[in-house]
Length: 422
Ligand SMILES: *Cc1c(COP(=O)(O)O)cnc(C)c1O
Image (cartoon, rainbow, N blue to C red):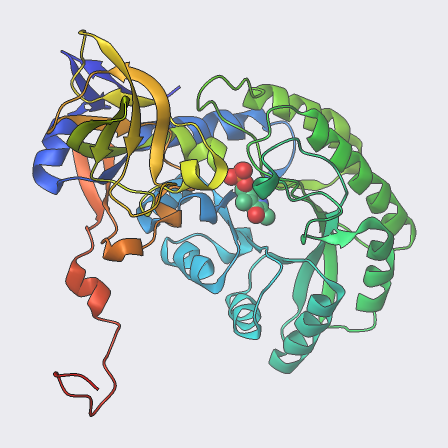
């Protein structure tokens, strides 16, 4: 459920007309609905009411600090995967004791940041990382709480680029090394193992792979407890899928029910790291039709957003629903919706039947709240779009549009080169 819909033939986000936002902010623009985020967060967290739980929103899905502040106000913690994301979460006011730090390649600087901020725990992804974490903790005289991320070799049946629980993927530590790693950590008083962690992938549309992974974790958990380790947190990651087109993911309640049944007897505090399911359907990308043309019988609609603004179709062959901002009841056409970037992968839809569009029309690319703006780039020297957050009757610019000057500001021509060349 989301709060985008037509009122008197014009697409609205909550009670704000998309046309009014575009008049003020221009295109392309990301527009998010705070009501939708709140609703998704509440449905998700309510589903887990009966067990002790910390919901650590996966910052990488959408890391705008206004979105983080909104989620913080709802009680969310954060799952971060870089020093930058940690800083964002702290800036948004999220309690460090609700922050977990994941990722296979944490730098020493990032580990220091996490230790100094006194985050809840590091999700450690290799034996070397555990060693380094221990050394830095000792140097700073700060105890590093950690969970080991298990690679359970479970097939999450999602797109290969977002499957993270298979034996051939770079993530986590194989099951048979976990016990050993825990034992090693015992030698360093600055390392405190407090949990187990898993994250098997994103956009999962069934509960079975989650349950399979949890079963593996439970086995390890019991072994570790028997060895005398005091485990507290069972972090089962994120990954619940959403509806972009015809997917049928489990409802949060169904997902929760299956998980709770599986973990109830462990006495663990559950940590969840949802990203997409909270924000995915809470955002759209609004773009303007620049040109239409027919090449060798194929119809193209060329818009002012490109793959640099939203790369999911190019990267994952992802489907995004596309609708006109002004409802059109006339004929439909089969078109390719493409951007201005000089790549054939720069498309939002191929051979898609949508209402006929003309130069100047606005369209909305739906379900663009997760892994969308955060993956944008400046390819083709294109400034990143603005981001707007709607709340009821009001809308707020939460990231101004970049300017070309912004892009040039970080670059310099070596000293002594004159303007006529080298
Ligand atoms: C990306 C990621 C998530 C969030 O995944 P979603 O599919 O957006 O829920 C959670 N945990 C980790 C470790 C991740 O890398």
